[in-house]
Length: 386
Length: 147
Image (tube, rainbow over all chains, first blue to last red; front, side):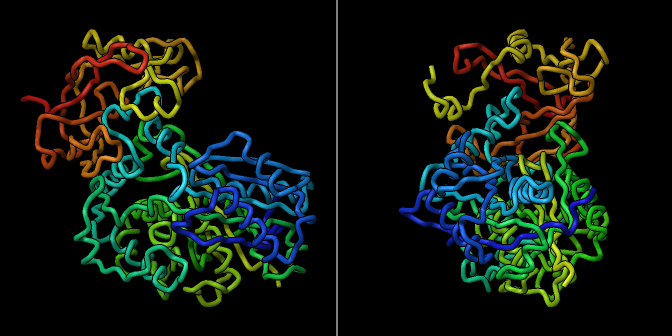
């Protein structure tokens, strides 16, 4: 039994992103939920499923229960998931399964954070430091995402002759999109010359290769049956395919430097949807780092191994290019909502509402990647049958 | 002694737990012990509660030769953890040991610009330190191989 085409994202709720003093994570999460329900043209009493990702700044074990209480919900399905940056896409896949299996009819997936102005990212810091707990890599000064990713990036670049300009072209393309998005954190145009003058955090990664450190904000999406979604307020983004794959050996696995589990999650999603890489009109990658985008492009079959860099350098990730990507600016320039803002932009592209809209976008792929490429989730959204 | 999770995770020393005790005891004897599986012969790093190939909990160890090559690395220019701010730039490297597994460590005793993928390295042990619960240990580190 395939769930392809059976469910859809019928509503999205997005708060402001950035620095939002005075706003608690709860207030942002509940605002996003209300916006998503309103956007779908539904009412609170229609919602009978709640799926949450706990905020990094406050990693509560009973987050879903507490948020459900604050929303005054009675649900037929409840779930909480945290697999890092893969959570957004994986939760949507889970919501689709729950709806299609009849566990609930209208599911809301939500994540919200005030890590920029509120509590520091305690959980993130703890996890990064103790990412390989038994080996205690923090003792060697291995603390923080860029140091984790830089070693994969270095090996990938060395193996395939990828240049720093190629990495930079990803940052430049996404900034170009952000410059048209009034809600983006970084909107000043960026040139490759400016990129090359930018300082390194952890070589070969510069500040501009890394996601925005932390943002306040929240995103919620409403998942229901495709049939019901067609009668609601907004055009549905039909869930045509999904996959959630993992390789939990981290950088102890030599294969894990130049390819991610996304190669497998994408295969699952394509097979489910009956689609090929050539069918994808627009992509929303999990752009925690520029190098991550290049490797994911190859994992997803958009380029052969080692060819994503030259492809990006030709400007193909910009609007009007062969594969317009991260059209809201992504996590590099819009906000770091751990992939949730990237997911919301995928829905906007299918609706035709992006500030960098791709003409006649029929198929959008959305990626999520967590735990320093341990987990990877892929979602294929389509306009579906008229 | 740390009192809260925050204090525990804020520190930069390893935390010796039951399943890694043998590994850290080895460092006091200047031995880099690589975990082995008594059932299937798998050789693995870092140490874990079971064999990642066959899930057996019958585990042992061998003493590594201390020779290896740089599989990948990064030159850290901005320390995110405050304990390392004074040390930048420093090298975090993934060392492919002669025995097969890859382990994360530092490459020291050479300019950071000289480190290359594939570079032969040799083991040395840093000064004795204590974890948050006063267990003594020494960090295995690597430097360019001589000759």
